Amino acid sequence: MAEINPDAPALAAGEQRFLRRCFQLARLGAGSVSPNPMVGAVLAYDNRIIGEGWHQRYGEAHAEVQAIRAVARADRNLTPRSTLYCALEPCFHHGKTPPCVDLILEQKIPRVVVSSIDPNPLTGGQSVAKLRAAGVEVIARALEAEGRSLNRAFFTWMTQKRPYIILKWAQSADGYLGRAAERTPISGPLAQRLVHRWRSEVDAILVGAKTARTDNPRLDNRWYSGKSPLRVALDFSGKIPGNAHLLDDSMPTWILGGKRPGQWKNTTFLPLAGAGPDLDWIPFLLEKLHAGNRAILLVEGGAYTLRQFLDNGCWDEIRVLENPVRLGGGIAAPRVPESARLETSGLIGTDRVEIWLLSEAW
Ligand code: AOF
Ligand code: ZN
Image (cartoon, rainbow, N blue to C red):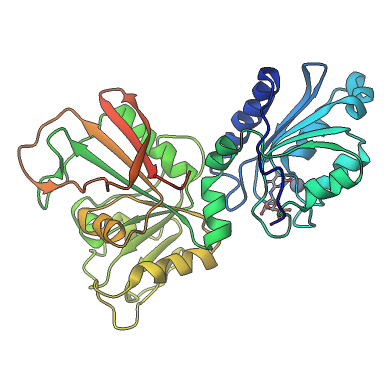
């Protein structure tokens, strides 16, 4: 990637506001744009936003196009005198849509403020260079840490060629996931709704065989708007009962295990050669998800499955919900590794939410 402004510039407060507005708009695409990044754009003239937009759906118009299109007729003469703020470097390449960099040049926008540089090698700094070569003033890498954190899943996907892995569990105040061999409700209703929001924002959701048997989860998103992710369950020894929700063929589902008899429309069986829980199934699954364009994986348990990811250092983010209930015993919750950094901590209803990230990464 081309070296661009090694020292990220300090932005004036008003400009920071416009760029943060881009981040806020970008998040509206959560759950609809993956494996693309979340991108927002704002066009401002003389401290006033004249157009704004975001990348709303995978394969559809990019944020810059939306922002430029959104300018009212009466303000169109201002476009060639405005600054365009972008949560990510505008694209350089012809993908599913034409290059945003060319649109910016066509529109004769004289100044562009960009947060992170696009890690996609098809762009990778080339748009910043092209704009500058054409005489456009470009401030690059502004509020870069925030821009990278916003799109940390996309950065991971692009640079590591695997899905971004979020481990999630709910625990009691005394550190248990539940009673052994029994579905144990822990989280309060608001926390449960938050979990469904998280489901709406990811591309795939995984549970182990034991959770599939004990909890009989649906793994869909029914308590929040937006889509449901691909369901994935481990079933190495074929013990998930045939009447389990995960085998109802009602929505796209992958079962890591041998094929069951019958006609399946939405369910795909992915047998591992020499199947067994000790086999290297994590790289196998990550590879399949990558090939299937699934950029964000949420691992919802149970203890064994979570521990496999933790012990192998295969995680990017950990989300813990803790309810004040005390169980006094049961299946111990995993521990957040020492290498994690607390990013967010707060209350949702009765439950504490903690989001942990890898320390050095973001
Ligand atoms: C932008 N603005 O809003 C987004 C960008 O297949 P396409 O045409 O949608 O291109 C996808 C790539 O474009 C994606 O990998 C990333 O590099 C960039 N995303 N770029 O200028 C946007 N979403
Ligand atoms: Zn673009």
